Amino acid sequence: MKLIRSIDELRAQLRGQNRTAFVPTMGNLHEGHLSLVRLARQHGDPVVTSIFVNPLQFGPGEDFERYPRTLDADIEKLQKENVYVVFAPTERDLYPQPQEYRVQPPGGMGDMLEGEFRPGFFQGVCTVVMKLMVCAQPRVAVFGKKDYQQLMIVREMCKQFAMPTDVVAGETIRDCDGLALSSRNRFLTPEERVEAPMLYRLLNQIRDKILSGEKDIQGIERRAFSKLIDRGWQPDYISVRKQADLRSPTAQEVDAGKLVVVAAARLGNTRLIDNLEV
Ligand code: PAF
Image (tube, rainbow, N blue to C red):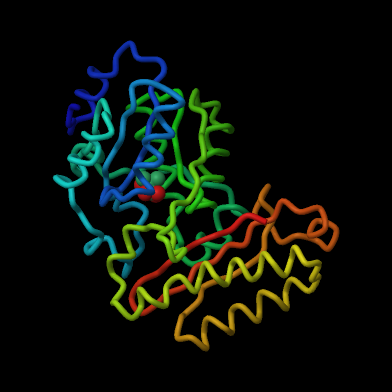
């Protein structure tokens, strides 16, 4: 496995490869990331992983400074997965000059849900993903379903720019109590860690209600939101959406299925997001 810092070196190392499978990450790797690496292996060869905590996707007051950086441990994990190249540029390597050209996702999809509560987030994600893909030229790139909206936006970006990269979705990996694995889970206090799986339990309760034929979606959303507040969370949203475009479903669309329940909520100082397909 090769650790590469510079764009030029990455290009040289991957020259001639036309089946590269790419897994972009911000490091602090856990089983969720490693499952994406294993999925990448099924779709291409060589497997390339990037580790870069992208400042463009963090807003003022977000956790860019305290985002866990654990490069040595990450490298060890990727070595065991037989990754061919780890691309871990510094900020100067990836953004040698201020990144003034940016990729702006469209208003509807980019401004709702995560986009509403993290303005500029998807612009930062799309810009770095585009740049990383230009550097690595992957045939396939793997993104986790945990960041459902990110996956959809990146997939649409690749499609609309006719990029030669297929976006493959990896399932969310959970702890045995249901909490979706996330690098941010390490910020939870022991008490918060006990409470945290509540978010997934709530998503399941909502799914069960929909499947049992309950029609008042807004009522379901309101009650779930209140429940989180009562338990000490600060929810941003908990909402039933269509898988296809993340818009709210009409009554007929609820009947047709293909929904996803999406949620984001703060527990203490930690913001958790999760979702569940229905
Ligand atoms: O999901 C992430 O870890 C990041 O948003 C990504 C896709 C690596 C871009 O920085």
